[in-house]
Length: 80
Image 1: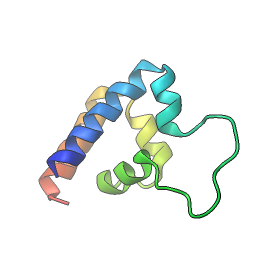
Image 2 (image 1 turned 120 degrees about the vertical axis):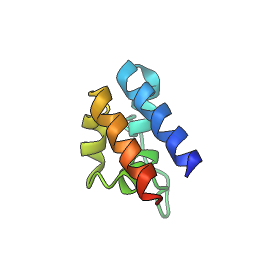
Image 3 (image 1 turned 30 degrees about the vertical axis):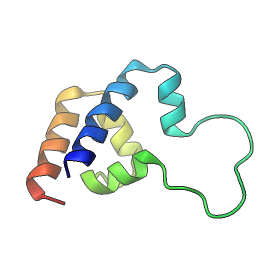
Image 4 (image 1 turned 45 degrees about the vertical axis):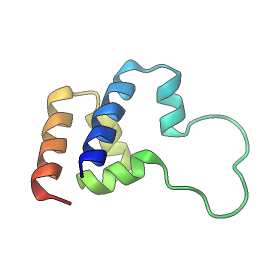
């Protein structure tokens, strides 16, 4: 649980900067995908943990720091 909390705080930090790290974590890079089963993206795992529904909702929540922090706090309280 502590690992997920740290991942979420780092992800919020990266998404607010809107630099190269933002593109990498959202997976919006050009090119072909590799063959086989695709790996789970970081945001998909965090969206499940935060119970944000879709990953897009979690990405939008990172723009508002207070909303993002309350989502993280609620997930930690639930202990999932």
